[in-house]
Length: 121
Image (cartoon, rainbow, N blue to C red; front, top):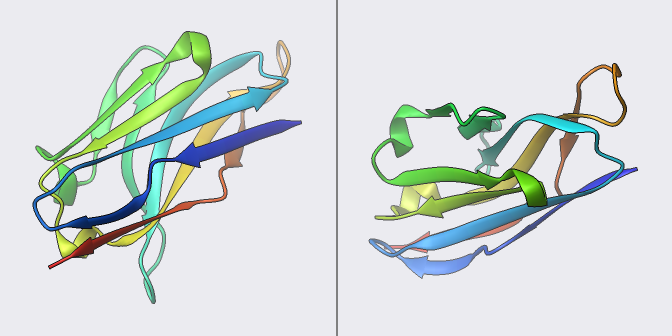
């Protein structure tokens, strides 16, 4: 059983910063990639940022230059540093992990429960 637990969401004024954390626990053999997605009311879930096992990163255009994703592989933890936040960043942020639970098992996607980020104008 694998669990992803997010923390760090909250309410912040425009221009402020927040740092999200996501820790994966359980039976984990390897983690191929971890990332953050978000879903605003009435909108589809979208990719925010992703980081691979070798440290390659990819960001949504809307957050480039403002958000930074990082990971601590030894702790199976991924972080999202969010700076210069805008009201349009308001959403539920979900952690995602693409990982294997055993040697040679297929990669499966796991999701956290989500954490609310609200940016006031």
